[in-house]
Image (cartoon, rainbow, N blue to C red):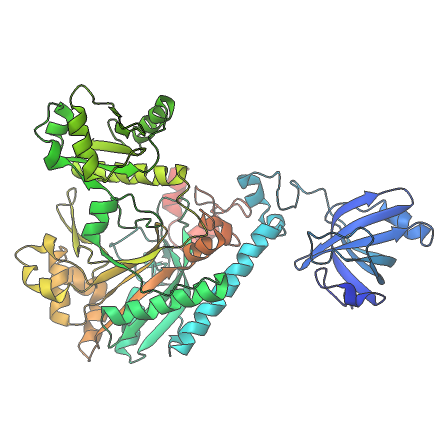
Length: 586
């Protein structure tokens, strides 16, 4: 038996018991006649004591031990004289009577402690060592608990977990597919699924009624903090439902997770915010509503001013930062530099300070009188001590820049507390978006999203104004999940394909199997997919999903631990009939 207890299990009540522990050496402290070792496993740390007076040979043996050696010890539990309140086992220690070295270890490339000296790339290269650290392991334990509770909740709601294929058909809509060449079907390819969308709809046609799956999905797209080439979804579909049925079900799941995992009670119905209002007031379809600071549109109020920038701008808008009139010129210059960054793209920043002495100071004093500036301030309900920040320019570009400015001010003002949660549903998305380059519409979500019933009459006359029966769950400015009520009528689906520029032949070639299934009694249905990695990172208070994935890719889509992707042998390429193309590039 390698162990009778774990390294996080022993307490005062175990004193005088003989125990066996196994684990990794965290730290060795040789104090002359006594040697102390911290022994670690996934459950915690226990202090080991080697006494030279009673066990001289054992003490000598510890001289060969280094960090991360795997050892087994046998001994007696004793009460510690210098207790350690920072660890659960801090009241006890083991008086070691026997030591067995199970495996030695080279010196690790970084310290395996909560606060490590290893950089991101180094820790990813040695991810199996990084996973020994408490913060990383705790993230994966949290991931396990959330997955477990998702299954518990959906099972209680009569959902059936069903696996769908990983090797599927490539489609041109959405992000780029990862493609997989077929050896047995020369010149043909599978694709890895971006989502199980069509299969879960087919399960509804099959009468499954309620489906879910915690499933791997794949997208060959540029990466950032909340994206990985392979990621995990909580994928769900329901039959005989309308939008409110779906929102209520998954609002219930979200509240359940907050209660069970975070002990946070959310005792209100999540607000519903239209896409149009989200853009108007926050410049984003995933607004962070932990704080107010809504946009105020000043376009009409300042269009006849003497300030040329305002007169010529398509949009003029701003935010009010309460209590920030004390900002210095240096701080305001930093904000100006922030909005002028290439990735934000604003031309400049206008500020108005409403000082506590009643005076008003702005960067446009020569164009506006104090009375005019106070009138602008009244639009923001600005009080003495507040700071109004204004941007002007093209509509979409300025709204986006103002969104970034709002988030930056929220950060500086301490309003983006990671322990505060503000969930909402964003609804009424546009059904279609116009692609200038391709000169055609694309589906805002996917081609199977149903238009809102009241907008059906505009499908042919004004397709760009049609709203989708679609919705996103947003928490703290992060899109956690999204979905829609689906088209289940063959005629409407054909009309949708036509709007998206599909010929009948293209639609049949790519989605004929789904259209054929609809001929056999498809029920009204809809669903949602939650980003499981994003959900876990939100609960963990992290900005990057990479920290909640056991073996993630880096920002270049590479696994630096196993050095993947990598070349393959010519023999494999020959089998796939693609060797010539590869050799030509050599």
